[in-house]
Length: 593
Image (cartoon, rainbow, N blue to C red; front, side):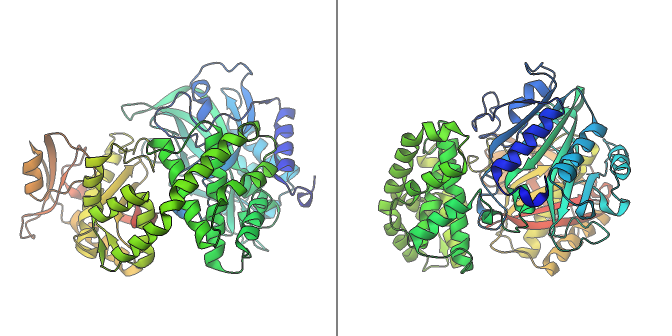
Protein backbone atom coordinates (compact mmCIF):
# COMPACT_ATOMS: atom_id res chain seq x y z
CA UNK A 1 0.00 0.00 0.00
CA UNK A 2 1.59 3.36 -1.02
CA UNK A 3 2.24 5.74 1.84
CA UNK A 4 -0.30 8.25 0.49
CA UNK A 5 -3.15 5.75 0.92
CA UNK A 6 -2.67 5.31 4.67
CA UNK A 7 -4.38 8.35 6.14
CA UNK A 8 -6.30 7.16 9.18
CA UNK A 9 -5.62 5.57 12.53
CA UNK A 10 -7.75 2.58 11.58
CA UNK A 11 -5.80 1.94 8.37
CA UNK A 12 -2.43 2.17 10.12
CA UNK A 13 -3.45 -0.21 12.91
CA UNK A 14 -5.04 -2.68 10.45
CA UNK A 15 -1.90 -2.81 8.30
CA UNK A 16 0.32 -3.21 11.36
CA UNK A 17 -1.65 -6.03 12.96
CA UNK A 18 -2.14 -7.90 9.68
CA UNK A 19 1.56 -7.64 8.81
CA UNK A 20 2.71 -9.19 12.08
CA UNK A 21 -0.02 -11.83 12.02
CA UNK A 22 1.42 -12.82 8.63
CA UNK A 23 4.75 -13.21 10.44
CA UNK A 24 3.24 -15.74 12.92
CA UNK A 25 2.42 -13.23 15.68
CA UNK A 26 -0.78 -13.57 17.74
CA UNK A 27 -2.94 -10.50 18.29
CA UNK A 28 -3.57 -9.65 21.97
CA UNK A 29 -6.01 -6.99 23.25
CA UNK A 30 -5.04 -3.65 24.78
CA UNK A 31 -4.78 -3.92 28.57
CA UNK A 32 -6.19 -1.54 31.18
CA UNK A 33 -4.49 1.77 31.88
CA UNK A 34 -4.41 0.70 35.55
CA UNK A 35 -1.59 -1.87 35.97
CA UNK A 36 -2.85 -5.06 37.57
CA UNK A 37 0.29 -6.38 39.24
CA UNK A 38 2.75 -3.49 39.40
CA UNK A 39 2.54 -1.12 42.37
CA UNK A 40 5.56 0.90 41.19
CA UNK A 41 3.70 2.93 38.56
CA UNK A 42 0.35 4.71 38.50
CA UNK A 43 -0.57 3.94 34.88
CA UNK A 44 0.37 1.65 32.03
CA UNK A 45 3.11 3.64 30.33
CA UNK A 46 4.20 1.26 27.58
CA UNK A 47 2.94 -1.71 25.61
CA UNK A 48 5.28 -4.11 27.37
CA UNK A 49 4.00 -3.19 30.81
CA UNK A 50 1.22 -5.83 30.99
CA UNK A 51 3.62 -8.46 29.60
CA UNK A 52 6.31 -8.29 32.31
CA UNK A 53 5.65 -11.82 33.72
CA UNK A 54 6.01 -13.29 30.22
CA UNK A 55 9.12 -11.27 29.48
CA UNK A 56 10.60 -12.80 32.63
CA UNK A 57 9.96 -16.36 31.44
CA UNK A 58 6.34 -17.24 32.23
CA UNK A 59 4.75 -18.88 29.18
CA UNK A 60 2.15 -16.82 27.35
CA UNK A 61 -0.97 -18.82 26.37
CA UNK A 62 -0.75 -17.48 22.79
CA UNK A 63 2.90 -18.37 22.29
CA UNK A 64 6.19 -16.56 21.80
CA UNK A 65 5.22 -14.01 19.13
CA UNK A 66 2.69 -11.32 20.02
CA UNK A 67 1.35 -8.09 18.52
CA UNK A 68 -1.02 -5.41 19.82
CA UNK A 69 -1.87 -1.72 20.07
CA UNK A 70 -1.75 -0.62 23.72
CA UNK A 71 -3.34 2.48 25.20
CA UNK A 72 -0.90 4.35 27.46
CA UNK A 73 -0.80 7.28 29.88
CA UNK A 74 2.38 9.20 30.68
CA UNK A 75 2.17 11.98 33.23
CA UNK A 76 5.77 13.22 33.42
CA UNK A 77 5.18 15.53 30.44
CA UNK A 78 1.89 17.15 31.50
CA UNK A 79 3.46 20.62 31.49
CA UNK A 80 4.87 20.00 28.01
CA UNK A 81 1.43 19.27 26.52
CA UNK A 82 0.48 22.20 24.33
CA UNK A 83 3.16 21.81 21.66
CA UNK A 84 2.82 19.79 18.43
CA UNK A 85 3.99 16.40 19.70
CA UNK A 86 3.41 15.85 23.44
CA UNK A 87 0.41 13.83 24.66
CA UNK A 88 -0.74 12.44 28.00
CA UNK A 89 -2.76 9.68 26.33
CA UNK A 90 -1.39 7.85 23.29
CA UNK A 91 -1.47 4.46 21.59
CA UNK A 92 1.59 2.29 21.12
CA UNK A 93 2.08 -0.17 18.26
CA UNK A 94 3.85 -3.17 19.79
CA UNK A 95 5.24 -6.52 18.75
CA UNK A 96 7.19 -8.99 20.86
CA UNK A 97 9.40 -12.01 20.71
CA UNK A 98 9.34 -13.88 24.02
CA UNK A 99 12.56 -15.84 23.75
CA UNK A 100 12.00 -16.57 20.05
CA UNK A 101 13.65 -14.40 17.34
CA UNK A 102 16.43 -11.98 18.26
CA UNK A 103 18.10 -8.88 16.85
CA UNK A 104 18.43 -9.71 13.17
CA UNK A 105 14.86 -10.81 12.56
CA UNK A 106 13.45 -8.05 14.80
CA UNK A 107 15.27 -5.30 12.91
CA UNK A 108 14.38 -6.80 9.53
CA UNK A 109 10.68 -7.04 10.48
CA UNK A 110 10.57 -3.41 11.59
CA UNK A 111 12.36 -2.23 8.46
CA UNK A 112 10.09 -4.28 6.19
CA UNK A 113 6.97 -2.87 7.83
CA UNK A 114 8.21 0.71 7.50
CA UNK A 115 9.56 0.51 3.95
CA UNK A 116 7.34 -2.11 2.28
CA UNK A 117 3.98 -1.76 4.06
CA UNK A 118 4.11 1.97 4.86
CA UNK A 119 6.28 2.78 1.81
CA UNK A 120 8.69 4.96 3.76
CA UNK A 121 11.68 6.00 1.66
CA UNK A 122 15.09 4.51 2.45
CA UNK A 123 16.67 7.85 1.60
CA UNK A 124 14.83 9.41 4.55
CA UNK A 125 15.57 6.64 7.05
CA UNK A 126 18.12 6.68 9.89
CA UNK A 127 18.75 4.74 13.10
CA UNK A 128 20.53 4.91 16.43
CA UNK A 129 22.11 2.07 18.39
CA UNK A 130 23.55 1.69 21.88
CA UNK A 131 27.03 3.17 22.28
CA UNK A 132 27.94 0.92 25.21
CA UNK A 133 29.25 1.67 28.69
CA UNK A 134 31.38 0.11 31.40
CA UNK A 135 28.87 -2.69 32.01
CA UNK A 136 27.31 -3.27 28.58
CA UNK A 137 29.28 -3.42 25.30
CA UNK A 138 28.70 -1.29 22.22
CA UNK A 139 25.96 -2.77 20.02
CA UNK A 140 27.99 -3.43 16.87
CA UNK A 141 25.71 -6.35 16.02
CA UNK A 142 22.66 -4.15 15.41
CA UNK A 143 24.76 -1.66 13.44
CA UNK A 144 25.97 -4.44 11.10
CA UNK A 145 22.38 -5.59 10.54
CA UNK A 146 21.32 -2.07 9.56
CA UNK A 147 24.30 -1.80 7.19
CA UNK A 148 23.26 -5.07 5.55
CA UNK A 149 19.80 -3.56 4.93
CA UNK A 150 21.29 -0.63 3.05
CA UNK A 151 21.39 2.01 5.80
CA UNK A 152 24.72 3.85 5.28
CA UNK A 153 27.07 4.27 8.25
CA UNK A 154 26.49 8.04 8.17
CA UNK A 155 22.86 7.34 9.06
CA UNK A 156 23.73 5.15 12.06
CA UNK A 157 24.35 7.02 15.33
CA UNK A 158 25.83 5.38 18.43
CA UNK A 159 24.11 6.94 21.46
CA UNK A 160 23.88 6.30 25.19
CA UNK A 161 21.23 8.64 26.50
CA UNK A 162 18.26 7.44 24.43
CA UNK A 163 19.40 3.94 23.59
CA UNK A 164 18.86 2.16 26.86
CA UNK A 165 15.30 1.26 27.76
CA UNK A 166 13.62 0.45 31.03
CA UNK A 167 12.52 -0.93 33.17
CA UNK A 168 8.98 0.48 32.98
CA UNK A 169 8.69 0.55 36.77
CA UNK A 170 11.07 0.16 39.70
CA UNK A 171 12.21 -3.29 38.56
CA UNK A 172 11.87 -5.55 35.55
CA UNK A 173 13.19 -6.33 32.06
CA UNK A 174 15.40 -3.78 30.32
CA UNK A 175 18.20 -3.50 27.81
CA UNK A 176 19.78 -1.59 24.93
CA UNK A 177 17.65 -0.49 22.02
CA UNK A 178 17.84 0.67 18.44
CA UNK A 179 15.59 3.54 17.37
CA UNK A 180 14.30 4.38 13.88
CA UNK A 181 13.94 7.92 12.54
CA UNK A 182 12.32 9.40 9.43
CA UNK A 183 13.16 12.75 7.85
CA UNK A 184 10.14 15.02 7.50
CA UNK A 185 11.85 17.72 5.42
CA UNK A 186 12.20 17.70 1.64
CA UNK A 187 15.64 16.14 1.22
CA UNK A 188 17.39 14.32 4.04
CA UNK A 189 21.01 15.28 4.76
CA UNK A 190 23.64 12.62 4.13
CA UNK A 191 24.54 12.39 7.84
CA UNK A 192 21.99 11.65 10.57
CA UNK A 193 21.95 14.30 13.31
CA UNK A 194 19.74 13.26 16.29
CA UNK A 195 19.49 16.92 17.35
CA UNK A 196 17.84 17.92 14.05
CA UNK A 197 14.09 18.03 14.78
CA UNK A 198 13.29 17.12 11.18
CA UNK A 199 14.38 13.58 12.10
CA UNK A 200 11.28 12.17 13.83
CA UNK A 201 11.49 8.97 15.88
CA UNK A 202 9.02 6.45 14.43
CA UNK A 203 9.94 3.29 16.33
CA UNK A 204 12.16 1.58 18.85
CA UNK A 205 13.29 -2.04 19.05
CA UNK A 206 14.14 -2.77 22.68
CA UNK A 207 16.60 -5.65 22.96
CA UNK A 208 15.75 -7.02 26.40
CA UNK A 209 18.78 -8.76 27.81
CA UNK A 210 18.67 -7.80 31.49
CA UNK A 211 16.43 -7.66 34.54
CA UNK A 212 16.79 -4.85 37.06
CA UNK A 213 16.34 -6.24 40.59
CA UNK A 214 15.08 -4.53 43.75
CA UNK A 215 18.68 -4.15 44.88
CA UNK A 216 19.39 -2.12 41.75
CA UNK A 217 21.50 -4.81 40.08
CA UNK A 218 21.22 -5.75 36.39
CA UNK A 219 21.31 -9.49 35.75
CA UNK A 220 21.18 -11.25 32.36
CA UNK A 221 17.76 -12.58 31.41
CA UNK A 222 17.59 -16.31 30.78
CA UNK A 223 15.02 -15.48 28.11
CA UNK A 224 16.05 -12.73 25.68
CA UNK A 225 13.13 -10.70 24.37
CA UNK A 226 12.30 -8.22 21.63
CA UNK A 227 9.90 -5.34 22.29
CA UNK A 228 9.06 -2.98 19.43
CA UNK A 229 7.18 0.21 20.22
CA UNK A 230 5.93 2.89 17.84
CA UNK A 231 3.56 5.74 18.61
CA UNK A 232 0.38 5.68 16.53
CA UNK A 233 -0.06 9.47 16.63
CA UNK A 234 3.51 10.24 15.60
CA UNK A 235 3.61 7.60 12.84
CA UNK A 236 0.30 8.84 11.48
CA UNK A 237 1.59 12.43 11.39
CA UNK A 238 4.68 11.32 9.43
CA UNK A 239 2.56 9.35 6.94
CA UNK A 240 0.37 12.42 6.38
CA UNK A 241 3.33 14.81 6.08
CA UNK A 242 2.23 16.70 9.19
CA UNK A 243 4.64 18.27 11.66
CA UNK A 244 1.73 18.85 14.07
CA UNK A 245 0.20 15.64 15.47
CA UNK A 246 -3.01 17.54 16.29
CA UNK A 247 -3.71 17.98 12.56
CA UNK A 248 -4.24 14.23 12.12
CA UNK A 249 -7.58 12.45 12.45
CA UNK A 250 -6.68 11.17 15.95
CA UNK A 251 -7.25 14.74 17.16
CA UNK A 252 -9.19 16.72 14.56
CA UNK A 253 -12.75 15.75 15.65
CA UNK A 254 -11.95 17.04 19.18
CA UNK A 255 -10.22 20.15 17.87
CA UNK A 256 -13.15 20.97 15.60
CA UNK A 257 -15.56 20.63 18.53
CA UNK A 258 -13.40 22.99 20.59
CA UNK A 259 -13.35 25.44 17.65
CA UNK A 260 -17.16 25.33 17.54
CA UNK A 261 -17.54 25.83 21.29
CA UNK A 262 -14.95 28.61 21.50
CA UNK A 263 -15.67 30.30 18.17
CA UNK A 264 -11.90 30.38 17.60
CA UNK A 265 -9.79 28.86 14.81
CA UNK A 266 -7.01 26.36 15.46
CA UNK A 267 -3.66 27.64 14.22
CA UNK A 268 -4.54 31.33 14.00
CA UNK A 269 -3.36 32.44 17.44
CA UNK A 270 -0.47 30.61 19.18
CA UNK A 271 -1.96 31.11 22.65
CA UNK A 272 -5.37 29.77 21.61
CA UNK A 273 -3.79 26.90 19.68
CA UNK A 274 -1.81 25.82 22.75
CA UNK A 275 -4.98 25.99 24.87
CA UNK A 276 -6.91 23.88 22.33
CA UNK A 277 -4.23 21.19 22.37
CA UNK A 278 -4.24 21.08 26.18
CA UNK A 279 -8.04 20.82 26.36
CA UNK A 280 -8.12 18.13 23.65
CA UNK A 281 -5.33 16.07 25.20
CA UNK A 282 -6.57 16.27 28.78
CA UNK A 283 -10.17 15.54 27.78
CA UNK A 284 -9.10 12.43 25.87
CA UNK A 285 -6.84 11.21 28.69
CA UNK A 286 -9.58 11.82 31.27
CA UNK A 287 -12.17 9.87 29.27
CA UNK A 288 -9.88 6.85 29.02
CA UNK A 289 -8.76 7.01 32.66
CA UNK A 290 -12.37 7.13 33.94
CA UNK A 291 -13.33 4.29 31.58
CA UNK A 292 -10.78 2.10 33.39
CA UNK A 293 -12.31 2.72 36.81
CA UNK A 294 -10.50 5.79 38.17
CA UNK A 295 -12.48 8.72 39.58
CA UNK A 296 -11.28 12.22 40.55
CA UNK A 297 -9.82 12.37 44.06
CA UNK A 298 -6.88 13.69 46.06
CA UNK A 299 -4.96 10.43 45.85
CA UNK A 300 -2.55 8.97 43.31
CA UNK A 301 -4.40 8.13 40.04
CA UNK A 302 -7.43 10.14 41.13
CA UNK A 303 -5.21 13.14 41.75
CA UNK A 304 -3.71 12.90 38.27
CA UNK A 305 -7.24 12.68 36.81
CA UNK A 306 -8.44 15.66 38.86
CA UNK A 307 -5.41 17.66 37.79
CA UNK A 308 -6.03 16.86 34.10
CA UNK A 309 -9.72 17.79 34.26
CA UNK A 310 -9.12 21.02 36.16
CA UNK A 311 -6.29 22.07 33.84
CA UNK A 312 -8.56 21.39 30.86
CA UNK A 313 -11.39 23.41 32.43
CA UNK A 314 -9.08 26.34 33.10
CA UNK A 315 -7.85 26.42 29.49
CA UNK A 316 -11.37 25.99 28.13
CA UNK A 317 -12.37 29.10 30.11
CA UNK A 318 -9.42 30.96 28.60
CA UNK A 319 -10.83 30.01 25.19
CA UNK A 320 -14.17 31.53 26.17
CA UNK A 321 -16.03 28.24 26.74
CA UNK A 322 -18.11 28.96 29.82
CA UNK A 323 -19.58 25.62 30.89
CA UNK A 324 -19.89 21.89 30.25
CA UNK A 325 -16.79 21.93 28.02
CA UNK A 326 -15.62 18.46 29.02
CA UNK A 327 -18.98 16.72 28.55
CA UNK A 328 -19.25 18.05 24.99
CA UNK A 329 -15.92 16.48 24.03
CA UNK A 330 -16.90 12.86 24.75
CA UNK A 331 -18.74 12.31 21.44
CA UNK A 332 -15.80 13.25 19.16
CA UNK A 333 -13.56 10.97 21.23
CA UNK A 334 -16.06 8.17 20.55
CA UNK A 335 -15.77 8.89 16.84
CA UNK A 336 -12.00 8.53 16.88
CA UNK A 337 -12.00 5.27 18.88
CA UNK A 338 -14.93 3.06 17.79
CA UNK A 339 -12.91 -0.03 18.77
CA UNK A 340 -12.55 0.75 22.49
CA UNK A 341 -15.74 -0.63 24.00
CA UNK A 342 -14.71 0.62 27.45
CA UNK A 343 -15.42 4.25 26.61
CA UNK A 344 -18.69 3.42 24.84
CA UNK A 345 -20.03 1.12 27.56
CA UNK A 346 -19.12 3.60 30.31
CA UNK A 347 -20.43 6.67 28.52
CA UNK A 348 -22.84 7.75 31.26
CA UNK A 349 -20.31 7.21 34.05
CA UNK A 350 -17.63 9.14 32.16
CA UNK A 351 -20.01 12.03 31.49
CA UNK A 352 -21.14 12.06 35.13
CA UNK A 353 -17.62 12.32 36.59
CA UNK A 354 -16.45 14.88 34.04
CA UNK A 355 -19.49 17.06 34.60
CA UNK A 356 -19.37 16.79 38.39
CA UNK A 357 -15.68 17.66 38.51
CA UNK A 358 -16.10 20.57 36.12
CA UNK A 359 -19.04 21.96 38.11
CA UNK A 360 -17.16 21.46 41.39
CA UNK A 361 -14.12 23.29 40.07
CA UNK A 362 -15.97 25.78 37.88
CA UNK A 363 -17.91 27.17 40.82
CA UNK A 364 -14.71 28.31 42.49
CA UNK A 365 -12.41 28.87 39.49
CA UNK A 366 -13.26 32.53 38.89
CA UNK A 367 -13.09 33.31 42.61
CA UNK A 368 -9.78 31.46 42.83
CA UNK A 369 -8.33 33.34 39.85
CA UNK A 370 -9.43 36.61 41.43
CA UNK A 371 -7.82 35.60 44.73
CA UNK A 372 -4.64 34.57 42.93
CA UNK A 373 -4.52 37.97 41.20
CA UNK A 374 -4.71 39.68 44.59
CA UNK A 375 -1.92 37.49 45.96
CA UNK A 376 0.17 37.99 42.81
CA UNK A 377 0.53 41.70 43.55
CA UNK A 378 3.45 40.71 45.77
CA UNK A 379 6.66 39.27 44.32
CA UNK A 380 6.12 35.91 46.00
CA UNK A 381 3.16 33.76 47.00
CA UNK A 382 3.70 32.26 50.42
CA UNK A 383 3.19 28.58 51.13
CA UNK A 384 0.15 29.38 53.26
CA UNK A 385 -1.38 31.39 50.42
CA UNK A 386 -0.72 28.58 47.92
CA UNK A 387 -2.33 26.12 50.30
CA UNK A 388 -5.33 28.44 50.67
CA UNK A 389 -5.80 28.30 46.89
CA UNK A 390 -5.78 24.50 47.11
CA UNK A 391 -8.01 24.12 50.15
CA UNK A 392 -10.55 26.86 49.43
CA UNK A 393 -10.57 27.04 45.64
CA UNK A 394 -9.46 23.56 44.58
CA UNK A 395 -6.29 24.70 42.80
CA UNK A 396 -3.75 21.85 42.54
CA UNK A 397 -0.31 23.23 43.42
CA UNK A 398 0.80 22.60 39.82
CA UNK A 399 -1.89 24.99 38.59
CA UNK A 400 -0.81 27.67 41.05
CA UNK A 401 2.79 27.15 39.89
CA UNK A 402 1.69 27.51 36.28
CA UNK A 403 -0.19 30.73 37.02
CA UNK A 404 2.77 32.07 38.98
CA UNK A 405 5.16 31.26 36.13
CA UNK A 406 2.92 33.16 33.72
CA UNK A 407 3.11 36.18 36.04
CA UNK A 408 6.85 35.80 36.63
CA UNK A 409 6.51 35.43 40.41
CA UNK A 410 7.70 32.79 42.87
CA UNK A 411 5.96 30.41 45.27
CA UNK A 412 7.37 29.35 48.62
CA UNK A 413 7.03 25.65 47.91
CA UNK A 414 8.83 24.59 51.06
CA UNK A 415 6.29 26.35 53.25
CA UNK A 416 3.46 25.05 51.07
CA UNK A 417 4.70 21.51 51.54
CA UNK A 418 4.71 21.90 55.32
CA UNK A 419 1.17 23.29 55.23
CA UNK A 420 0.07 20.52 52.93
CA UNK A 421 1.49 17.75 55.10
CA UNK A 422 -0.11 19.31 58.12
CA UNK A 423 -3.59 19.14 56.60
CA UNK A 424 -3.52 16.41 53.96
CA UNK A 425 -2.10 12.94 53.48
CA UNK A 426 -1.62 13.35 49.74
CA UNK A 427 1.39 11.63 48.26
CA UNK A 428 3.76 14.22 46.81
CA UNK A 429 4.80 11.70 44.16
CA UNK A 430 1.35 11.41 42.60
CA UNK A 431 2.13 13.80 39.75
CA UNK A 432 5.32 12.07 38.66
CA UNK A 433 4.66 8.39 39.45
CA UNK A 434 4.60 6.18 42.51
CA UNK A 435 8.35 6.09 42.87
CA UNK A 436 11.10 8.53 42.09
CA UNK A 437 14.03 6.41 41.07
CA UNK A 438 17.44 7.12 42.53
CA UNK A 439 20.45 5.01 41.71
CA UNK A 440 19.97 2.21 39.23
CA UNK A 441 22.94 0.31 40.69
CA UNK A 442 25.95 0.82 42.92
CA UNK A 443 28.67 0.39 40.31
CA UNK A 444 31.73 2.61 40.15
CA UNK A 445 30.13 4.53 37.27
CA UNK A 446 27.00 5.42 39.22
CA UNK A 447 29.02 6.27 42.33
CA UNK A 448 30.90 8.81 40.24
CA UNK A 449 27.73 10.24 38.72
CA UNK A 450 26.06 10.43 42.12
CA UNK A 451 29.04 12.31 43.52
CA UNK A 452 28.88 14.64 40.52
CA UNK A 453 25.27 15.58 41.43
CA UNK A 454 26.59 17.01 44.70
CA UNK A 455 29.09 19.17 42.82
CA UNK A 456 26.37 20.19 40.36
CA UNK A 457 23.93 21.08 43.14
CA UNK A 458 26.35 23.45 44.88
CA UNK A 459 27.64 24.90 41.59
CA UNK A 460 24.08 25.80 40.59
CA UNK A 461 23.57 27.51 43.94
CA UNK A 462 26.76 29.51 43.55
CA UNK A 463 26.06 30.53 39.94
CA UNK A 464 22.28 31.03 40.07
CA UNK A 465 21.64 31.87 43.74
CA UNK A 466 21.21 30.22 47.13
CA UNK A 467 17.46 29.84 46.61
CA UNK A 468 18.16 26.97 44.22
CA UNK A 469 17.19 23.66 45.81
CA UNK A 470 17.26 20.07 44.62
CA UNK A 471 13.83 18.75 43.58
CA UNK A 472 14.78 15.23 42.52
CA UNK A 473 17.45 13.19 40.78
CA UNK A 474 17.87 10.02 38.77
CA UNK A 475 21.08 8.15 38.02
CA UNK A 476 21.65 5.53 35.34
CA UNK A 477 25.00 4.02 34.35
CA UNK A 478 25.05 6.44 31.40
CA UNK A 479 24.09 9.82 32.84
CA UNK A 480 22.81 11.83 35.77
CA UNK A 481 19.53 13.73 35.79
CA UNK A 482 19.08 16.57 38.30
CA UNK A 483 15.91 18.62 38.94
CA UNK A 484 16.00 22.01 40.69
CA UNK A 485 13.77 25.02 41.17
CA UNK A 486 14.45 27.93 38.82
CA UNK A 487 11.99 30.20 37.00
CA UNK A 488 13.56 30.23 33.53
CA UNK A 489 15.80 28.52 30.98
CA UNK A 490 19.52 28.79 31.73
CA UNK A 491 21.62 30.82 29.31
CA UNK A 492 24.54 29.25 27.45
CA UNK A 493 26.89 31.37 29.56
CA UNK A 494 25.32 30.11 32.80
CA UNK A 495 25.58 26.49 31.64
CA UNK A 496 29.27 26.99 30.80
CA UNK A 497 29.92 28.60 34.19
CA UNK A 498 28.28 25.69 36.02
CA UNK A 499 30.23 23.14 33.96
CA UNK A 500 33.46 25.02 34.57
CA UNK A 501 32.96 25.24 38.33
CA UNK A 502 32.18 21.52 38.62
CA UNK A 503 35.28 20.64 36.61
CA UNK A 504 37.41 23.02 38.69
CA UNK A 505 36.39 21.12 41.82
CA UNK A 506 37.04 17.80 40.11
CA UNK A 507 40.53 18.95 39.10
CA UNK A 508 41.16 20.17 42.66
CA UNK A 509 40.95 16.51 43.81
CA UNK A 510 38.88 17.29 46.90
CA UNK A 511 38.48 14.73 49.67
CA UNK A 512 34.97 13.41 50.41
CA UNK A 513 34.02 12.33 53.93
CA UNK A 514 30.94 10.75 55.48
CA UNK A 515 29.57 11.06 59.00
CA UNK A 516 26.42 9.77 60.68
CA UNK A 517 24.72 12.41 62.83
CA UNK A 518 21.23 13.35 64.10
CA UNK A 519 19.01 14.98 61.48
CA UNK A 520 18.65 18.21 63.49
CA UNK A 521 22.43 18.53 63.76
CA UNK A 522 22.78 17.95 60.02
CA UNK A 523 20.28 20.71 59.24
CA UNK A 524 21.90 23.14 61.66
CA UNK A 525 25.29 22.46 60.05
CA UNK A 526 23.89 23.82 56.74
CA UNK A 527 23.83 20.41 55.09
CA UNK A 528 21.60 20.45 52.00
CA UNK A 529 18.49 18.23 51.93
CA UNK A 530 16.16 17.41 49.05
CA UNK A 531 12.97 19.45 49.28
CA UNK A 532 10.06 17.41 50.64
CA UNK A 533 12.16 14.34 51.32
CA UNK A 534 11.48 12.57 54.62
CA UNK A 535 14.58 11.56 56.57
CA UNK A 536 15.18 9.29 59.59
CA UNK A 537 16.41 10.66 62.93
CA UNK A 538 19.99 9.64 62.11
CA UNK A 539 21.36 10.54 58.67
CA UNK A 540 24.56 10.31 56.64
CA UNK A 541 26.13 13.64 55.70
CA UNK A 542 28.62 13.67 52.81
CA UNK A 543 31.06 16.58 52.80
CA UNK A 544 33.27 17.60 49.88
CA UNK A 545 36.11 19.33 51.71
CA UNK A 546 37.63 22.48 50.22
CA UNK A 547 40.18 24.60 52.06
CA UNK A 548 39.73 27.46 49.59
CA UNK A 549 36.22 28.00 50.99
CA UNK A 550 35.72 29.98 54.20
CA UNK A 551 33.61 27.13 55.62
CA UNK A 552 36.28 24.57 54.79
CA UNK A 553 33.96 22.67 52.45
CA UNK A 554 32.45 23.11 49.01
CA UNK A 555 29.40 20.86 49.42
CA UNK A 556 27.63 19.27 52.36
CA UNK A 557 24.54 17.12 51.79
CA UNK A 558 22.30 14.65 53.58
CA UNK A 559 22.48 11.55 51.40
CA UNK A 560 22.48 7.76 51.54
CA UNK A 561 25.27 7.39 48.99
CA UNK A 562 27.24 5.72 47.53
CA UNK A 563 30.07 8.12 46.55
CA UNK A 564 33.71 8.11 45.54
CA UNK A 565 36.32 9.21 48.09
CA UNK A 566 37.93 11.98 46.02
CA UNK A 567 36.56 14.26 43.28
CA UNK A 568 39.66 13.56 41.21
CA UNK A 569 38.20 10.17 40.34
CA UNK A 570 35.33 11.64 38.33
CA UNK A 571 36.75 12.61 34.93
CA UNK A 572 35.31 15.50 32.89
CA UNK A 573 31.81 16.76 33.64
CA UNK A 574 29.61 17.77 30.68
CA UNK A 575 26.01 19.04 30.59
CA UNK A 576 24.20 17.49 27.62
CA UNK A 577 20.75 18.99 28.11
CA UNK A 578 18.96 21.67 30.14
CA UNK A 579 15.16 21.68 29.92
CA UNK A 580 11.89 22.24 31.73
CA UNK A 581 10.74 19.40 34.00
CA UNK A 582 7.61 21.11 35.38
CA UNK A 583 6.33 24.58 36.13
CA UNK A 584 9.19 26.37 37.89
CA UNK A 585 11.37 23.25 37.80
CA UNK A 586 14.38 22.87 35.49
CA UNK A 587 16.16 19.62 34.61
CA UNK A 588 19.80 19.04 33.77
CA UNK A 589 21.14 15.87 32.18
CA UNK A 590 24.90 15.41 32.34
CA UNK A 591 27.63 12.84 31.78
CA UNK A 592 31.20 12.15 32.91
CA UNK A 593 33.70 11.66 30.10
